[in-house]
Length: 118
Length: 107
Image (tube, rainbow over all chains, first blue to last red; front, side):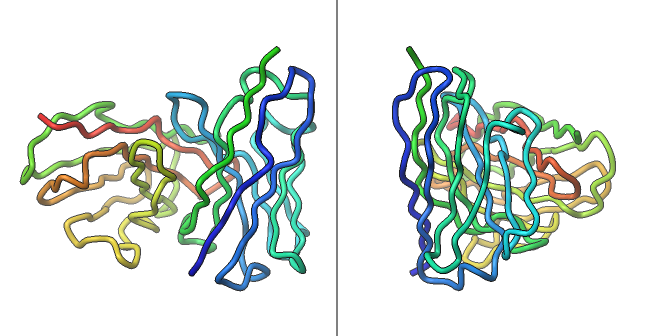
């Protein structure tokens, strides 16, 4: 079964850091671009970042540039998002999603919740 | 950044109704558009890719059309499972952007 499972979310104070993880199974992880998408409480979807199969290309939404870092370990079938200098507006469910290039994001995890509050 | 604008924001409809949701891009995105369905408390689900391609396993009552800046998602006969929020998303240029969502409610 094709599956993505996120972990690493939690409650963190403003200015704090977390490392979100996404474990992939059931497909050849190293063959796909991978994405992070977030959803603030009662709000819509916001694309955060993505990374090429070999990690050689990474793209970010402006609001997280310099604070968030996307990475992957193909040997461990895992995607990561290092989130630093967290702000209240980063509070959201963070989803990882597989991208079939040119066809959209076709597999999604269940999400991990990040809450930034003092 | 490319702005995606959906209309309406909320839609009230009955089972069996034909429903159309519109998505407009602030500049041309060719056909690089996807539609997603999100039920409450669940992750989004891909319905349509490249503006009109039906994702495997998605019922044929869902269809997409359009190119350039104007796109539509149509549900030909609304079913109980279809009451959800729908999002369009462009992947023509970074940053990828989503529309604000259209909530389809029971009338």
